[in-house]
Amino acid sequence: MLLHLITNISFEAPYAVSSLTSDLTDTTSDLMFRVLGFSVSPIESIAVKVDDGIWQNCTHVQGPLYVHHWDPNLYATGIHHIHVSFQFICVSK
Image (cartoon, rainbow, N blue to C red):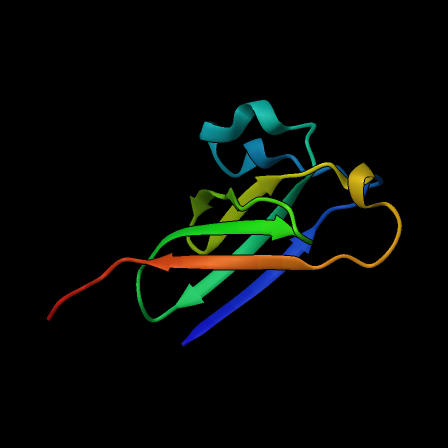
């Protein structure tokens, strides 16, 4: 079973990722996707792409939260599709 939620932030409300983790302190002024991924299997990585773009790996922040920088100006008009790919860790019993 897999559940995911994708959110993004607006120009009016910059999101300071540095408050979540010291590993991303240089991203305080960037906009990003936030992906919450939940699975009964351990998640190895999450990647996103918009429309027919290339797959981009997300950065794991903590728990189910993964983030990826993006430029919202590239998608200011029209309808766009966000694709999410999960890679799972194989666990043998």
